Length: 140
Image (tube, rainbow, N blue to C red; front, side, top):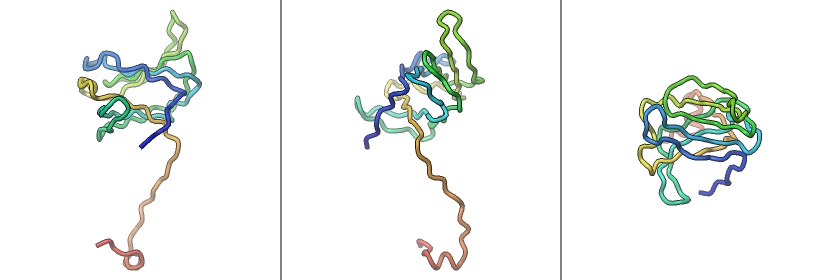
């Protein structure tokens, strides 16, 4: 399956992979973006262009607007999200924490994948009655 690339963010990479409390993902926005429109998924690399998502590793980012020049740094450990301005560069630095107890990138074949959340379909619970089951079939 092919997904178009994301141009408004640059995935710089994973820094300190496998190092407890220091492991983190670095992103840079190329334009003003709302980070709440993105998620990080962990995947296993199959080849240079293909990955397979790992179950249980979907991280929706908070609803924060960032603009270049900025850094978005996502630590895999627990912590409190915060933003600061780097006194030397003047760049905004947005820090997020995934809350994991273990490192995620100790295996070099495991990589972060950034997904832009664009479309949504929300379901509802349907109370089944005898009449509706007969009308649509019970599937048994």
